Length: 111
Image (cartoon, rainbow, N blue to C red; front, side):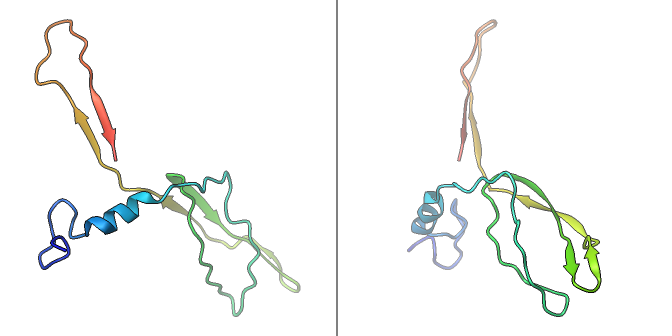
């Protein structure tokens, strides 16, 4: 494959055409209003949770709380933001020139 060879580069950034096509075919379908309402049992004060971020292009406020049978309730003390984004390319097509009082047609393509 010419794109995957040494030096890569080009418009595909070194990716093969097949890899680009595969990435494009994924249809975004996961759009919850709220996210991560799961109980996680922790050992030794820490837990690792592997989750898929929603397809929504937005930011999520992430916070936690904990309960313990002897120590009671804790709000976790830490909150943060998770930003979910998708790389896009926008191309604006405009006429070469416009005459006074003409209403031109502009085409914006987002990929």
